[in-house]
Amino acid sequence: MALHDQQIYNPDDPEILKKQAAAQLPMYEYNRTLPTEGNKRQRLLKEMLGKVGEGCFIEPPFHANFGGKHVMFGDHIYANFNLTVVDDTYIYIGSHTMIGPNVTLASANHPILPELREKGYQYNLPIHIGKNCWLGAGVIVVPGVTIGDNTVVGAGAVVTKDLPANVVAVGVPAKVVRPISDHDRKYYHGQMRTDPKLLS
View 1 (tube, rainbow, N blue to C red):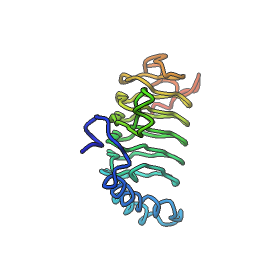
View 2 (cartoon, one colour):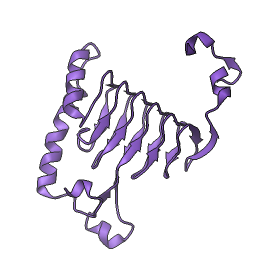
View 3 (cartoon, rainbow, N blue to C red):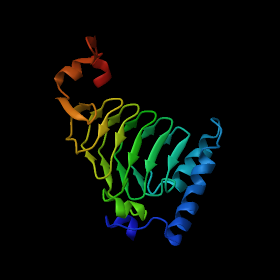
């Protein structure tokens, strides 16, 4: 299918638009749910997303080009308000990952050449986010990026290239500033000590 083969295509194809509109319906219903309707939200998550594991939750509102149909969740994933996924192709998110408010994961891209953009062409590249990652508030991840397991991306960062596992990355564009180390086992913030009982 054109959406997933990483080739240039026209997203205004009537068949694509028909599938897109149908995929968005559960998302619109999800965004109208009440905070007390936990069971309904869980049911709709399973309808919306391409795959969803146990114990996952997205705070409404949630925005997605294809209603989340191309988003693959592991287990125990939490996403805060205003998660935007441009899920024209697949976006994979590993178990125990946390996503802050106003994060954007964009799998769709457009050619640089003006003549191609004038005709509305685009192409899509999958995004892979590992297990137990944390994306801070306002993070943007662009098409084709892979983020390794356990990595923390600081608030407001723009991830334009792959990030390895077990690091902290910040900035625009996002750059690795340090590894996650034994210091992080001893201190959870600055010189605030972690209670060893929490790690047992």
